[in-house]
Length: 215
Image (cartoon, rainbow, N blue to C red; front, top):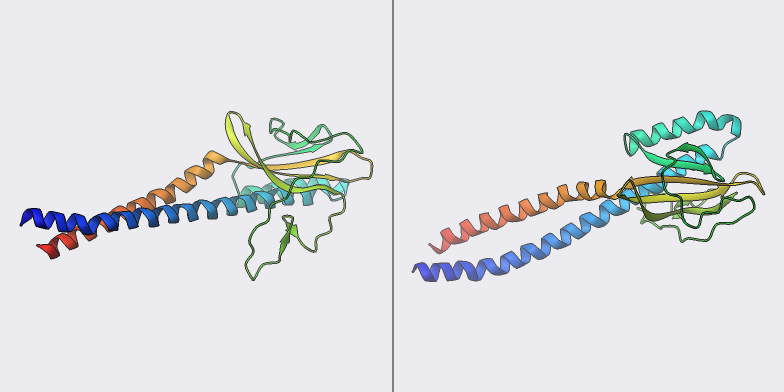
């Protein structure tokens, strides 16, 4: 009787375990995609916020830039990682944040084209084109905000970068905002552990219920 009961329990639980693993894997993939898209979109938004502060008149820029950094500090990170270069000169942010390999800081140069990200939009949101509002004026933009990966201090980075020129023939302005990828992964892992814990709990409850029913 015990052998039959164990075989019946195993026959039912093995497909249930396979189903739980499949469902858990799909759930973890959806968590990864959702967090990655949301983080990338926030990163592009951070670069755009800084760009809006930079493209104002030079007399106002000194007042607008701290406001933009405070906005990033309140909505993304306590210590936002960013840099703003005018040509080869650092205007604000971290001087150690790596520049794009193809960034051309000389006056009159044009940056190579990178495909900007496109994010899914809900029906209540304005459509985004090239990571910007579709009706936004792109005067002076050489390279719309795009995403790339680099390393900083031995840690992997996800960087949103935009290149623009304020004056015709003047130096290009590079605006960058970055996140540490290991911070993202740590955030994702908290949800992975919750999914795994819920799956184990459900399997244990199913095992006890079926074992009791067979008995």
